[in-house]
Length: 420
Ligand code: ATP
Image 1 (cartoon, protein in one colour):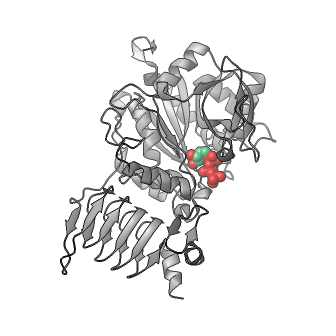
Image 2 (cartoon, protein in one colour):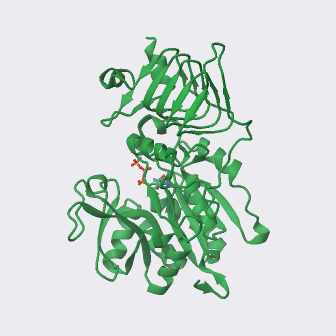
Image 3 (spheres, helix red, strand yellow):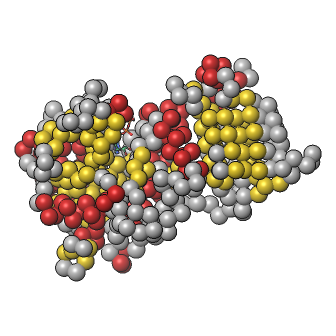
């Protein structure tokens, strides 16, 4: 392993996690919380994946910039991520936008979120800064990326991956030469350019950047003085370095994860209701692509202490049962049937209910006899007795939010509107 002295590079890096955006493509799921705070996988929030990657890679200095509807996110970070100790050269800074540079400016763009905290980062004095989007679900060893960055002598190293062109317009799209040097970078193009020789694929930025700290600070100061800049990494900083310096791609694949119990790479944006539903439901597969049970790459989180999940007969003797499903603590399944579903903490499913292909967030109550299929249910929703969803998409779309692929998102305010 490449090192500074005898230590891995990760011990000389600070991870700056951007968690201030809404993630508007998740519709009502981000009405009350930022996308990084959205629940994922039964016990976690989306941001836990970037943070766990940092810790599993050996990084011990982390800063998280928050802005949009940050209460739920900050409570989660305080609850689960407060184990860093200054006396061991560790730190965990939560950095809500607080007009530190100008009394009229919140975080304008992603670069501004870092710029407004440059004094804090300088005080940490780490040699490298790893800027991470806190809104993707993935497994990645940043030490491998840091090593490439140092060996290539790049000004910035940009994490990237091939993705279907049709899905890539929400990302920065780049072209690279055979050495990995980035030759062009377009932020969120409406019509993403294809990869040479691969008309259906684009090379997309993962929103993960490694910089030498001093270089980054100089770039941020230059950008802050530019009246034409939106102060955003994807729109301004990276295209500028591509033009005037050396921006090198770090291609994400199986070699970007450490060979532990599960050496497969995994990355999902989970940024639309369909993608979010799919990434969660995939976890119910017998051998899912994302193995949450991999003890060599644990996903740390804040989780309440709860009693075990419970499956009981109802008064008519109907069995409460779940097959091919993940059921979290404090759930009670009473005389109801679940298939291929993922239940977060404290969900109650009552007699005669039938639930299939469902992602159900914490503390939802599913009333007697409800039939729910292909749904995402927001936290705390009370599903009325006998509600049927997933059998008539047109009717579902009139009452709830149904996607083109037939996935229905249900929130409490949609349920409240049913009565009127
Ligand atoms: P959308 O446009 O769908 O609402 P977004 O703003 O959340 O998306 P991106 O612009 O792709 O997403 O942002 C990349 C990352 O930066 C995300 O993790 C997001 O939370 C974060 N982010 C976006 N804007 C800011 C900001 N002004 N301050 C801090 N973090 C931000």
